[in-house]
Length: 221
Image (cartoon, rainbow, N blue to C red; front, side, top):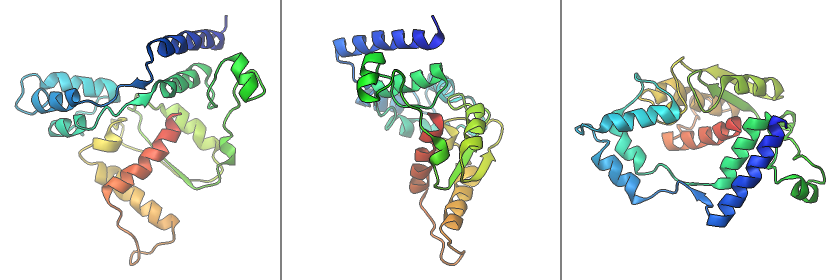
């Protein structure tokens, strides 16, 4: 049995399991996480090392850019929940090595896509200007995938490798995210829109992060 066939079998089992127990929302936010952040993850807690190690386990280790005081704020919003099918889709793409639509299984694929396998997304048809920012210490988005995507995009305007220790969560919460990433991103957005120094819009950090998150989600698929 091939790796992809094994993935299909595992997919069917997981779908049946999720449907049986009606497990559709994975890790929705709750008051537990907020209270955990306020009590266990604060700077004066003797247990905050647990929070720190969980953070590094999930996003990668970058001691220099990690800000312990941010953990209560982070846990008041994270996790925010996701569909189990979203996780299944990510898993399918990891196993198959293809950036393609959701695999429903052969029978349903034939009904929806008129073929056994789901069709791939054609990244060569993306004509909008795209910038790639990535780090070698990101344990959720491989630099190899970024390099592969860069070769396929017809309108790549920038490919920037961030400092070696830059992790997945650093894109949001690194101490120096403004100077390492956001300022350059704002400059790029302004230049792509033909804005001069006099007319440039100084985007708030929240908007910059939203723009980057949207881009980053695409690169993680």
